Length: 639
Ligand code: ADP
Image (cartoon, protein in one colour):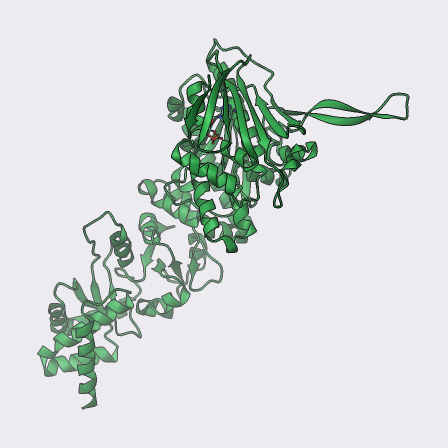
């Protein structure tokens, strides 16, 4: 009895997109169907290992056949198959998040039609779009399947319209047979190409060479007839893929190109990785890991949809796709796989994920990655700089995460631009070129060198020739406060706390000036009540008149960052300390005016404060009042 069912809404949209897609990379349908077949065999194999009752098999195989007359391609596997419910659930509904993202991307491309570049098109190739991609090349698809757990077999038929039908059929063994009825050739695309043995062979090599089960196809071969000068055509069953998992081959047997090719095919990347790392560990736990750092951050690395993780295999049997336990958050950008012979298959996936073995592998892999990075930093600094531009922020979050648990492992991997150096430098480099008598390491949050150099707080640091690290990211100041010192040298913000730059004599002189001006400073502080926490004689200004600094602890930069977090409704404020340069003409002028008329001080205090705010990149409290005060002052000056 035939039953007609309706696709779920999302599926309809995806089908529609597949059918009407401008997408040229239609050939990936084969990769998708082979990958589903291989997954289904993986599942069968996995279950046969953990469930004693299941018949063991050693003839796993994916078979492709072409029928030029009927214009069909058939892909057959002897994997796990699907029950009636699974058929409806899996093929009637979109299962995979990749498909949804794919839809978004296609939609985006369709909207900007004229500006679509080949790179955009290539990006699409990286999505695992699944079963529905069959409809890019076929106008009718039949799926014959029988689940390993069922006596009944079913035929699913769909033309990619709103509905599909399911019929009961006879099928001897478990597995799935998918038949695609190719679309008619048109002006834009020659679908008949896929009926060509040679095309299929190429596509399997290109996309599915490392599938671990043989992908076989009957291929016609012309052979010389023995003893005669004639040729005859024979049909030979040929295995099209290489099969041996790449990570199981010895390093010396595999070229970089092959590792890169594997990366692109397996993880749907379109650029070579920045580098790869093959880890072979024999010891308490035996495993092989093949790790890749992509060339650039995946476009959705920082979105919630992004799933970190490595693929997990046990004795080359695929277990799961994104095992997140294998990757600490801050390395979420890595791709690759772990294959271990010491993972128990008999425990549930949930328990497996909590297992001690996985934790050990994970921390071991993490260590290897960090030491590889250290190695690149030492031996190919330009490459490391490129890596850091793409992923440095992740390492910074690594320092910050878990209350600084990893700060010692990571601090030497951080590099920054600085005001004295052309190249980026590490803390170690900084310390190496510290000036005589310099005690601390200085930093400033800024977009670039010029911005740092123009900060009033830089006066004294600059005059001493000290280098200053330039911090570009929001997280940086938090990172500095977590690391707090390097090699016995404190990390100090040039606009926070006491910079400790003066000698005893200079300190004494300032102390004297302070004592002579107690009243003045107090009056200014009073005039700025509620706005600043203190008004002091500056130990860091040389040419500028004023600046605003924060005390130790929370910095202005942190204040800005914390207040941008949408969820917190409390405003956070760093201490505000107004510093005055006692050697500046303005200080002398105020002093004089104060002696003549102490009440005048309110206006000047406000002007100084507002200037300092502006220099710090804050908004001033009352711009109109500020402007009026300026005008008054100009008028007064002209008299
Ligand atoms: P994905 O493979 O990414 O989950 P697909 O749309 O390709 O998405 O397939 C959806 C689901 O259909 C699969 O997860 C699987 O459960 C089932 N499926 C597809 N092809 C096969 C197959 N050859 N054998 C058994 N199950 C299959």
